[in-house]
Length: 311
Image (tube, rainbow, N blue to C red):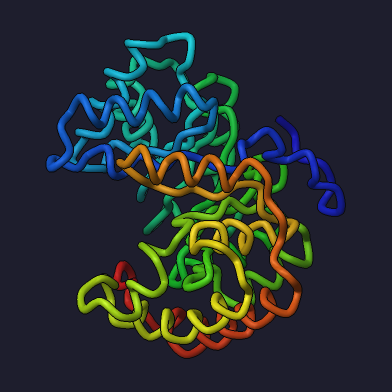
């Protein structure tokens, strides 16, 4: 699929479902295997895209997905799959490690998770782009998005400034919710300016904002608890019915966002994601802008100074 000019990216990733089912919880051993398959089937019946990786629960998630796919082969969803990491042979092997357990010949969207020499090659417009084009021609990966973290934003920024991803990479995928925006300020500003498509990961930032703020240990890192304390009054002022609705509406308050990825192993939570994603209204500008101000401050104060993997 060829990308249009920078000023016309409206067609890119336009076929994504607004809500994408995140599969991480399908590896939870506390949930019976049959129950996890049942949740996967429910998401398949809803017709939404899935997001997955062979790294989730040491491959156990793919086992659940394969069982669900075998039960309803006509409903196998389009997949976003995490692929990478440090060199091109490894990239091809990771693609194989994802496709073979699922019995698939190709994936719809590869999430490029780049590190080391492969990240450096991407930033300078190197040979990796030819390999990405080859993977498309071979039908192994039909399209690509680039994964971004605060500590890898410079890689994406250099490549985007050079125009190297055009025609190869259709968008960018990162944690994007009221408590997290993992594209650093300078990269985010360029994404907005060039109207680059975005897939928002981690819809609800790990749980209800009041729980993250008030329950000891609910936030897996202290910074999230502190951010929840700043965002909770904004959420309360908005009058929005639920935290899930607030988060989905926040993501879709930005025209660049094509979809949000929310993970659950619970049928009730899945239903809430699906219901909220079916009729989305952006947040009022004032509410959205209050959170944007927090994102910009957090990015400079904390995110870009963080060690890789620490957030």
